[in-house]
Length: 294
View 1 (cartoon, one colour):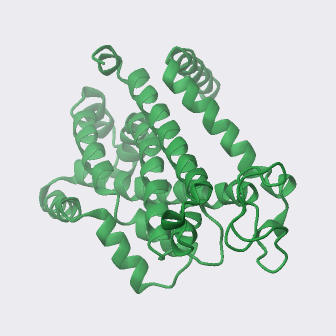
View 2 (tube, helix red, strand yellow; view 1 turned 180 degrees about the vertical axis):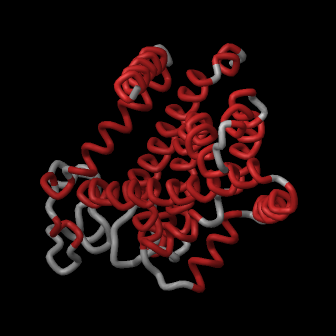
């Protein structure tokens, strides 16, 4: 039985990959993400850790792009290209961790509310509605302000304020799954709440969770950049949002130092777009009707 199950799973994964490759926009997004992830992982080898040093900066302040510094330098004389490559590590890590936390909370609450129903579902959905009507960015700013300034604070601030959409989607899917006949048979054969939720409901909502995760990552990266731009990030780490905040403090906007603002802004936009393209492609594969309607 186990061998048959794994065979079916491999066949399903292969079928999903064949259909995903037909989504041209999703394929472009996946290639872009693979290249950015490769750059982020190899950043210590490409630029070295000393690129972040303020005291040992190799250039002068705010140099224009040149052969030595292709993207120019910041106000401390550090190479912006090196900072951009190194910042990819923090920005991607925060986006992935925050999205994972957000989706985990939303999935847990959605499954529990859809499975148990009653007063628990009513209470859970009222709390979810409260988070939905409150701007998540404002809540994240409040949490990042009252907590210590660190990367983990940003992850928590984003994760615990952006889960309601996932919770509502998962709850609706859970209700649909539990209305199917095989759920009644599982209960009649003695399957408890844990068995039904873990063995039947969760595998059926995982495709929805997967597509939602890719969309949440792009939102998390944008939110992290916003918090860092507002000065609420960790000042000891280099991230794309932190680079924008440094450019603002250095007066790059008023002084016309466009090379200080453009690279991190473009990088944030490219990564957010790539994750969005991947998420939309996954939705189209998992829901053919959605793909046909676009």
